[in-house]
Image (cartoon, rainbow, N blue to C red; front, top):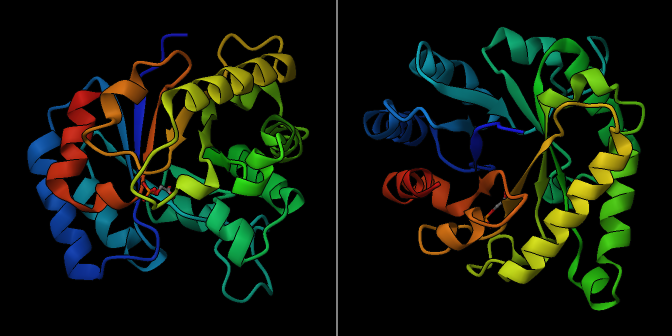
Length: 250
Ligand code: PGA
């Protein structure tokens, strides 16, 4: 299981065109020679094409923050896998807790997005995570298992390499304080074992990355844990120095 570590930047609904392009240019100056880490940037939809032209011929990949499961048709406001591939995305993020919460995305919708995206050749970061209440009630593992099983339903083992699981405990996202290394470790080990059961014949399993207030001070404690194959970074990914620092410490 010798895959590279992954650092995935989630800019959410932030940064305008000038800010996004200058951030990418600065990141490229600092990180272009970095080879040992997979780096993915996910700007908002309107800037994908412009950022793709900056990333062209570099080792940094482009992701959308969402995708729709249909190929084309009367789905106003939605964007298909083919359209994402067309503007240069090799990745898409699916099931972020902010979409589950504000856009009422269900595991069934998320599963359709995963199935279409992988079959079209996109790599997918599938986000899962428990709420504060679920953790308090001792339902963390139950909730994560449910999101994994329903989100990855009917996904063929041949697509496993295209999938990354992003574990993000919901209440630490944007809080400035990551989950404890013990909590991260126990959930990552749990996810790893669940994936082994779900994909018993795969030579590789999906990588599992942690997200939720990752910064340049806590990255080293997190990245050295077993079964932590990378990080999903929100706030700190919009500051060139902080983001590059994280990548260099991975
Ligand atoms: P954060 O966001 O790093 O700002 O906590 C992470 C995410 O939501 O992906």
